[in-house]
Length: 374
Image (cartoon, rainbow, N blue to C red; front, top):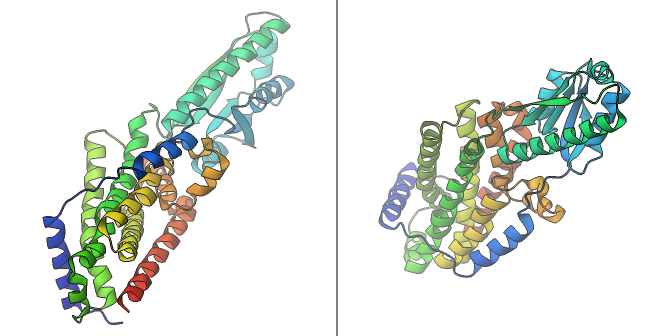
């Protein structure tokens, strides 16, 4: 199917004029409160359990193993990895196989047996500030329990104490804004899809102009991409504004490659816009299309993506449900690029899932429009 640049340009100008003249926002009266109650009721959980933990035990003595078993035996930590040093620890935390790292010095047991002051180092993935804070609190509590055990055993002297030296990687100050600002990009793009893309084709059906478009030489691809391009341009502008404000106002660092960030963001933007177009083509009613877009696009992006609530703390059925929403992959990539400075070699799995979703939405929207026009 051939695409005429002249006809496509005319469609793009027409859509820009529609957008400039109609900036209406539609709100749900019943579906949003119901959806919020259900999702918050099941997904909101501030308790941390089974935090993936990596251990570097340079002492490898009964005393150090007792300390590790104290962590592993608690309900809060799960010692899932053993690292050889800082390099292995960094690799595990970059890949999110560990959120907490514990490093026990080589002379740990000797100092404990002599009743001397000793230390362990605790590393926390600070890209999730709330989880990091709670994990450090749990570490402090468990170290206090271990000190009490040593005192009870009266190991040569009751002056033995372990001092925890906490250090958060990627977000040293555990600033929540550093975690929130990257997620705002996903929310902004979801709003565009819900409020604009979901009504653009439905508006043509309701006003009767779709019949006029059908009678013109405009092809199906020219129609869909003519509606997509103006929304895409608005989405790109919003991305630039969000990144700029995040840096200027909140001081959120951009440790990764900005080009990679925009590349990933534009892929997500394309997917959610074609999802909105698919709903608009299918529903033929602006209000209905907008409502479904809010319920199936905007709300899951905010609640089920890991932006606000940690996915690992949700019930297992809800965790499986998050895999069908592209925002899960997008938010994870945003945090990694922003705060960890990773490259495509680390986030390629999430990116591939996002590409598959985008391709499905493009094909589905065009096929659905073909059926509607026949």
